[in-house]
Length: 107
Length: 338
Ligand SMILES: Cc1cc2nc3c(=O)[nH]c(=O)nc-3n(C[C@H](O)[C@H](O)[C@H](O)COP(=O)(O)OP(=O)(O)OC[C@H]3O[C@@H](n4cnc5c(N)ncnc54)[C@H](O)[C@@H]3O)c2cc1C
Ligand code: FES
Image (cartoon, each protein chain N blue to C red):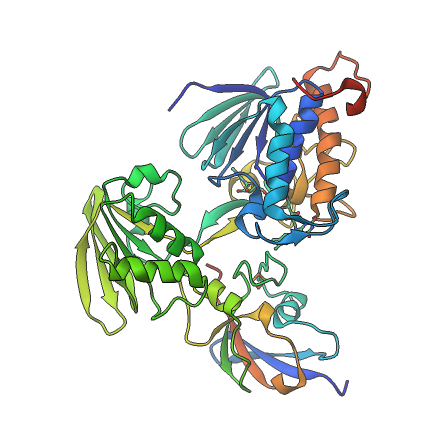
């Protein structure tokens, strides 16, 4: 589809899986990952309340800064990376084409 | 360790569904004991979203999750349920007479005639920081992942680690209880909860607590009991701090845990049940709420309530195979009591 974008998930070093994602359905990155059977719990269903959808951004277009709620939740994690994000807070939009991420280890 | 607790139904999990099961059991004059790994009742509602409004509870156009739990506690109070909180049910034995004996992490024993597993997504377990030797000091030897009883820390020297709500809130609270509180946070600022972060900052400026930013607790030391921790700055500088307790607070996350090892029929980490009475593959053991699965299952509070009502009918028949029961409306009997 013309609105589709490509997201790359690094499953292991140097090994990237390409996911095609629609941008006209209001999906979040968390929902895309779940739909592709990545083992994230997403206990809270995308409300930035559980931090079980933690990902690391490796490369790609710049993202909108996290909201206060997202920061607050990220701060609860024992391990945080420079570019950690909650995937449920990232809306799939056309400007995210080419984003490269890694799913963080579940804590 | 206290004497064995004896009851009719032992409910594993004090989430909304486990709590409502107490009510339905009470209508059948069955007594309940409820065990939960969390220090407070309410399951996901108290732990994850106490301040969020729920819109699909029949009769409530809108109700805060925390208020729904308060209401459930009020609703079941006439049936005098008893609780063991802050302990996880570990194991489970069926005795020859068809009754059950459950044992918790702290060795509490519950003797009951039927078991209702209302374990939700599993028991809430702490996220643990990557610190060597952490496990060695668990179980009363100095590492605490939850504050169950603040009094436990009275007059003690404690180090709290974490940057979220609970780390900030407990730092503020324990500043007046413990003799010395140090808060260690990996970041340079606290980006969430502005109010509690400001309080922590003020306590620090007033010399009431120590605040160590851009740092992590990296090593634990002690012979038997924890005696010292090493705090290492992001710049590599390390200091060693003597203490009585280390309290890493990095939130809790549900894990299926022991329920998965009890030999019950499972599918995708959920307990398979018969929807006639929500019985599991083991007679006398029932599973209700988010923990169970069956064709058409919806993980909703509403559905769990319905399951609780049918489950209690099944448990009643299991406990009293010869007694006949006819449904009575609560309106007929008036205010509920045991
Ligand atoms: C952010 C969010 C929003 C939601 N919104 C809605 C909504 O609008 N409407 C709706 O209907 N549902 C909603 N839900 C789902 C709803 O919260 C769940 O369906 C509900 O909590 C299930 O209740 P439960 O009693 O089965 O389990 P839980 O609430 O998960 O409680 C289970 C309890 O069992 C304990 N436990 C598990 N194993 C053990 C053990 N071995 N020993 C001791 N204790 C144990 C756990 O610690 C936990 O406290 C939402 C969920 C979340 C996270
Ligand atoms: S799904 Fe819970 S924080 Fe993202």
